[in-house]
Length: 179
View 1 (spheres, rainbow, N blue to C red):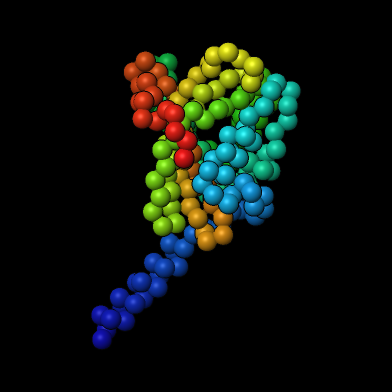
View 2 (cartoon, one colour):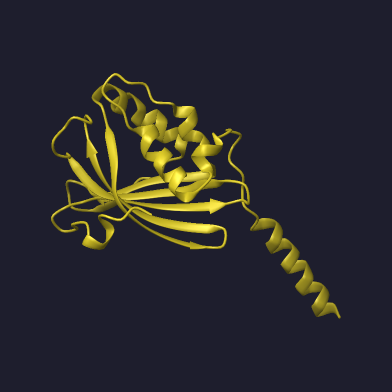
């Protein structure tokens, strides 16, 4: 009997601590968060724009769950692998001036999505341009996007990305299909 009570207490604790965490107070447009495709499309759209074009950073923040992270990974000039971890607010603080001053347009060129219950993962291949009129991208890579569904809307939990390099070209299976 004591073991049964202890087991129930453990299960109750796990159920409470593992419940989805809502976003940190930002209301999202329902059309931005109604599906996996919608939220990923909104994520690319909100960071993209021509030089001198302001971004809607409140819209950007509204896509993320509380305690979400954005993390680029790559090699520094010494060849060491480094990862930087940012909150959505830190990303805005560090990136907004550069993106808005120089122009940055990111286009999704392929996606592989897997879903189980309330969680989903998307490997989203991208090309980055300074302007939508550029003929060739200045970089390409993969965004590894983790998502969660709370029964009403989707949230971005993390975006973990790596730029393409000669050592790590984007595999063909990640280019072409979106969905």
